Amino acid sequence: MTASSQKIRVVVVDDSALIRSLLTSLLNAAPDIEVVATASDPIIAREKIRETAPDVITLDVEMPRMDGLEFLKRLMRLRPTPVVMISSLTSQGSETSLMALELGAVDVLAKPTSDVANSMNVYAEDIRDKIRAAAQARVAQPKRFLSHSAPASPALMKTHRPFDPRAIVFVGASTGGTEAIKAFLLPLPADFPPILMVQHMPENFTLSFAKRLDSLCAIKVKEAEDGEPVEKGCAYLAPGHSHMRILPTGRGFVIVLDRGEPVNRHRPAVDVLFRSAAREVGRNATGVILTGMGKDGAAGMLAMKHAGAWNVAQDEASSVVYGMPREALLAGGVDEVLSLDAMPLRVLEHVQGGGR
Image (tube, rainbow, N blue to C red; front, side, top):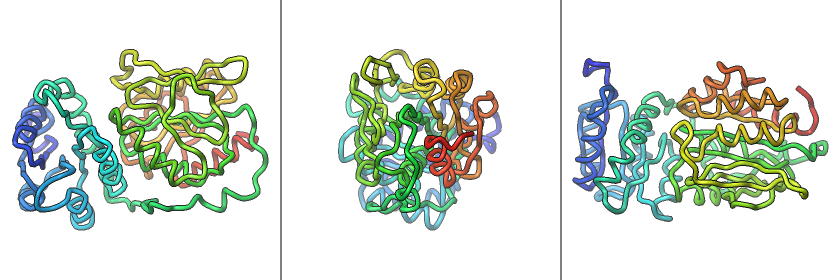
């Protein structure tokens, strides 16, 4: 991309002049991205957005004159535009960012809290990738499962055949995955087989995300801990700082975490989890690949299929970004392509021994 009209047009909204300047420099350094305006608060941003019609907006969480969440609500109602939230690495910042994702934000970017200039440079390519993914995202589709007390679906909670005691489900997701994972987990009953999940999100955000899911779902959801046993009725989310694997012991499986080098530029990486599933669980594994940009998980899912696992991928129509599911399908590792709505029941039927 060389012509300005072909570049991803970005408006940066942040009350910090330093962050606005750094984001502008980092984004403009990419040949396919152009910052067309900046704003120090949502009131100014409203006019800048109207004037420039950006493809993507970066939005700070806490800003003067209007709360970031309130601005996001109004933006999604009046002018749906892909938004990447900027949040500090704090408990409050994580909770607010999760609420923003539920309201329609595409992704979350952790704002450095010290040595800002150097930290931003370290994460420059990650920042650009989030902008590129957001530019491809579907933001006009209806957002469901927003209730903070949404019950699990009674249709799946009642009268089901026993689950295969050997079954373990492995889930990978990235951009748009927080809502997709929630939609997948909500209908599942409390005695569902164990689930291991990798969602690309910043360190310190995964704990808040797991707690949020646990408050909504019948199945227990927690951030995974190194060495803990894998048990039915529990979904384990990889922490944002570590790869996650599964390891057999004499008394079942345990979770292994490590801070090794990123894979596919991610840690945790879906491929690491899926390759572990192929190696240790084989035909008793079920693979689920959800919305996200890039190809993380495609090679691992193919390895799972070669080991006898059964795998499903989210379809394009229900994906926020149809990258990871498409790459897994093209690689040959996918057995079925399903809408997000159809996926929980189909996976439930399979782990009950419903066959392929």
